[in-house]
Image 1 (cartoon, rainbow, N blue to C red):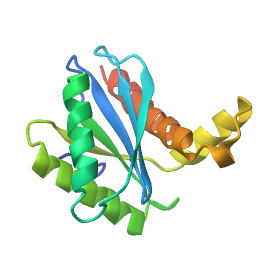
Image 2: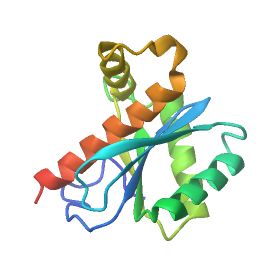
Image 3: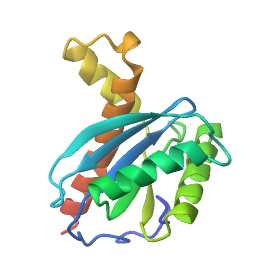
Image 4: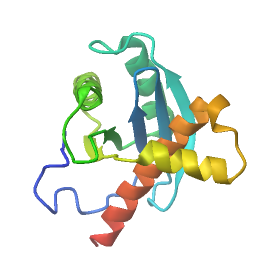
Length: 160
């Protein structure tokens, strides 16, 4: 598993294949995917958190199904930190999920990425598009996963 604190250049080479992006929360996990060439991230679904930290059994089972369905070559997990970059309880939860995913699916690389403000950005974009964000938390979680995966994709292509 790679971490946002890893040395620059880690994972800088794009290898063809779909990735899944995850916005992990206490109640829901937003899921996004990208095309094999890494051009565009799109929403997939929202996984309801049933088992949660520390085991994540139900969530990992569904994610395993999605990894197989999308033939994913990697998973990008959002790492929520405070605006000052400090770790929070949500950071620990995202790390717990990424560790559990790495253990459950060791053949699929998992990368943690800074996700500060992705949910805010996603909510604002949906609100701007006329969507009632109060009633559509599932959609916001998917949109947040799209924002973080697209940012990750864009950063990889900028390194070429």
